[in-house]
Length: 348
Ligand code: PHE
Image (cartoon, rainbow, N blue to C red; front, side, top):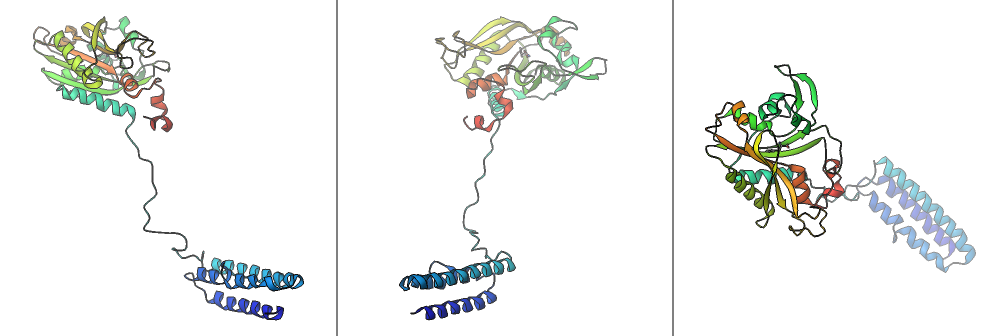
């Protein structure tokens, strides 16, 4: 093939492209592109033949070839635009047989998971879930729980007041503990009674690694005839063993809460060092962790709810949910529960 014949062929490629492109529809424009501009397309094959020409000829013919190529590309783009994108759905890479795009799965918040876990432990012991409310009156949060007005024990629970008075003229407040649910339950139904309540509580406290102004508690109440401290100890022991396994040990130390007498602080053997107390930062090498408040329902509380303390007795025990969650999930800073950093949750 000489240079003239090559030029002739080139112009024929140009012509047949022109007719192909003007008749092209959205469905076959990709075919036209492949036929003329593809790696083994008509233009590419022709350009490959340039190898046998002289340098001078190559220069001229190469320029002509490139000019045609540019024209073809421009005409193709213009036609594609005319046809609205030009690509069929298949050419656009839409494959309906592929599986869908993955999306991240959610899960329950660790605090919710802990509440579920604690609730299961109460339910297994025969306690029924009771309900309460976040905004309380002075009577349920303090008065009926044997916190007289101006009693220093009220200072143990720095209170948020909501700026509204109740029917007796006292300030309404955000409940400082779940214990008002004891009062609500005892006023709603006569003993025998076995209830628990998990929920949010509020205290005007500065935030640090172990304090927050909003946190969660769960507590149980049992009132019946002849309920004794032995019943409380057995129940707490079963509760803790359910959560931390049968090797967990429980001990009671005297403590003060106005609504129980005697009152106790319940400690469990450290779940990190197993009570060995050897250089353990979690129990500060004491071997014990303070986990619960507990005690026998104070006669004044039974009276405030209209029940005869000579006839009925009971116990209550409660815990901070965050404290349990920190142990169950190995989290050292309580603030993590409220920051909701997915990088933390994904490691649990
Ligand atoms: N309500 C107490 C507190 O918030 C805890 C507690 C519950 C103590 C039940 C005894 C019995 O500190």
